[in-house]
Length: 205
Image (cartoon, rainbow, N blue to C red; front, top):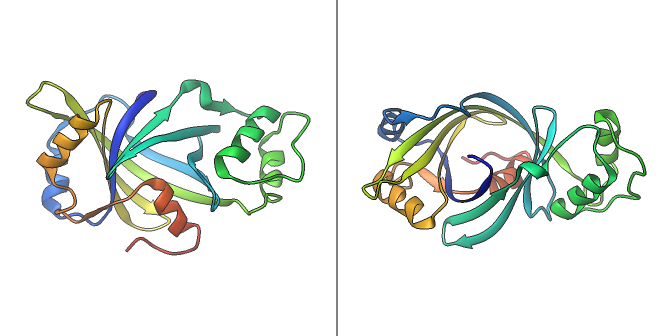
């Protein structure tokens, strides 16, 4: 999804082949597909989606929930390259709901950041997620197009996640009414919920 605010429905599970085939038949989005290796940072008090991707620390903030729909905000200004400034480390502590013995006084490289993560209270889990993702556009009768993400997760477990995204909640709901992902075998669940299981060594199925 492009930077900015958007509504999202996400589900995990093992959907019936017909759903995967229906999504695969949609027009492919021009960017964002491929193999991705993310390292998610999670703690019991985490209120944001935080991950290391392509050598950057990235934040995704949950703004609002409406039933199974969630409103998220991703901003380009909250994608931070290394070395990480002390203010970014403080931002991370707030996002994960953890405390450090002390905040760094100088920027942290990867090694320093990894060492600091071992000193948090409560502990921060690093969850490696290997994804194989495709993006598609689902046209609505209104003329709007909902982004449909179909991702095969290879690690930490073999599972499928599907997300429907649009700036307007009603467009996401309309896409749900077309694809019926729950009836097709998916359980509504955010990455934060999935991470809570994976961090404890459990699987989703």
